[in-house]
Length: 308
Image (cartoon, rainbow, N blue to C red; front, side, top):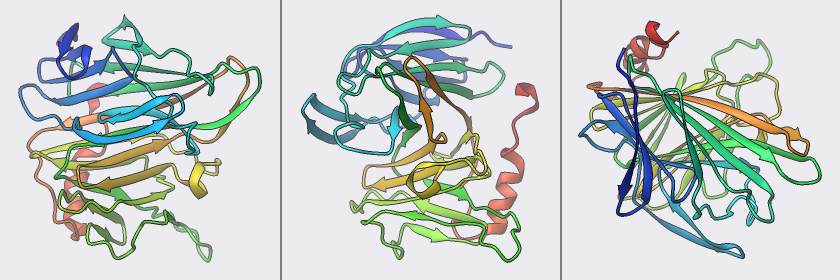
């Protein structure tokens, strides 16, 4: 099994970063700001994450910048709490096959964010352990919110609940005020929902749902990106019960997983784990052909044997 290379590099746009590489794929974690993952892709190939995110917001604590890539937030979304800037440097230490980056405690909010990022040597898989620690003198109720900003041009596939609940409803959607149900980018299937990123459409679109299957996928650059996470049935989630949310505009598409709500006491930590996988040379299915989607995912959704 190949060794994982862990080294500090410098990017003109982002400053110091830590690069993880298994020789087939590489990933960049920012150090001069963050915690963020600003790149994940096949070595020498396109970045599967969006790193051109022209969105900023003024807050009393300074300017919040989207940057792009992967970030850790806490839900429910509120301004200014959620939008505390992460423009400062983070501390980093090397761990086995990866790196752990820790942010200074957020002022006013008094929460501390941390990501532990490790890469597999056998395949292009990454594990991200997200941690939020309460540095307040009182309990805080929140959900850890892992947001991956994907590069433009791709097709997202999200599985619906298929569990038979008899006479009772088995699924619902969370919709935002700006979400148009007849948006041309979304296709509401029976087993799947597909969402096409369209760089010619700036209007925002978002939906959320309880994702009991615990995965979502994004096809782009001839490759397949899979995001896996745990859904806890009957747990309380933000936004009317959403463990997964997705948002798109003209320059990106966000894949967002959330932990259940938890009340953490002072110095307690909430942990939320994601696993990413990048598989090369996978053609996207027709966005409205569920038999073709089934055929594609029957080969790829199960974890590979070498990582079990």
